[in-house]
Length: 266
Image (cartoon, rainbow, N blue to C red; front, side, top):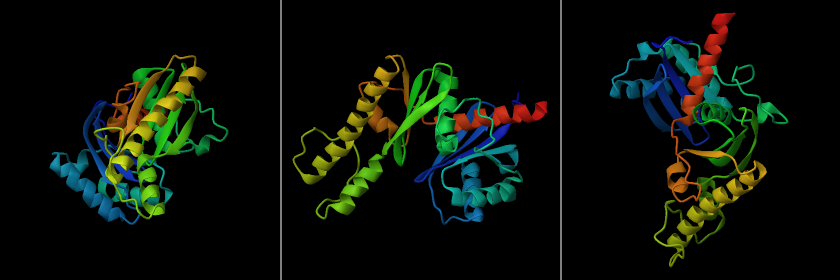
């Protein structure tokens, strides 16, 4: 097993946000959420992360490993350069050839996003199976894990932000609105009507898909919610799933440890 003194930097790079965390052994010491910028340079990422470390009393020299899950390929080279320059470490990217410990039953396993694999690994490790992970990111994704821990497949639906932006861009008289739970279902103005549609539409989408998954899985499944807007929607769901904001980062830690252990056995 990896040393308990391991200080691991993990980055989950999504299309909209990037989550950054630092683990000391199995303990998440710090976690930050940034806007994903495809224009950022390696130095800009390095300085930003170094400043975040400083604010939390951490030193970049303490980091002994870097693990990255990215669904934004143009940033991979930037993050690799950042890791080498600011942490003196070659990062491990979650991708083909990475030991995950789960079998992926997808027609083409390479199509499954790295963040979804990390979520699946962490969810099975922490909650057991069968389980469904609902991730509220740029898209709303549902990932299904079997009782044995196999990745069975999933569902991808438009995220809340995408839906809100589509309404604004395609309907001339509709404004941009803050997505939140409205005071009542029936809106009495344009903003309230849009908020009701976006919020309860997302809740209905979540519950409707989970109902169908429960029927397909025989009714026996755990549900875990994660992602930026998970607390907003999960609280209104009839399934009342726990919200695990660090699920993806935990998955990256677990995968890093499995690969480090495998490398030492060779």
